[in-house]
Image (cartoon, rainbow, N blue to C red):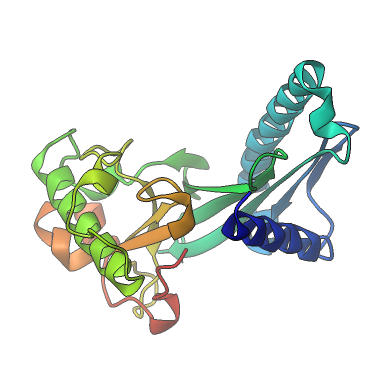
Length: 257
């Protein structure tokens, strides 16, 4: 293991240990193979339908992780001689727009006793009126794969990511190797939320989340991209025009997600 890998592993372990002092988990699974927990933030807990939806998903994740850990112990028991796998999943509200659309960031920490722990990020968009998950599709006139909206969205995402890479002094930010995993498709452009806005009840645009490895090597860490709503104004549906407006608050401007 390199010095950098050791540092990353120690850092992630410290983060996990620090989180042990957090509020009581909403779901826990612990046995000789795995120690895992799930936490919902207070806004999610206050919405019974949303909380139930997140916990249903989370418990499936816990069960799947436990099965994988048990199977790994059978084939490689030495891997577990010191401790069990450590998993954590957090559901955190990113924004609530128009009192209806709740954007949630689902972040994960996993330590399967390999070279270093890993993290992952995904998102959920919840419609409080319909009590169900939705996509950003209703906010645009069309979202066909490789259609004009998705091409414009991807162009803006890549431009935002290039700015962030330059801030980190990453070489070859103008190359296209790190872009290969992104596609002009709702399912392949990245995990997205509605960004908060300086205008009450509105969203300032779209925020995209990319965990380590998604748009660069592990050492670069996670990335975020922001697309202001004005960049897609001509593609917005009536509902999109209703919910988008204002500017992104400065406090929400850190792309090192």
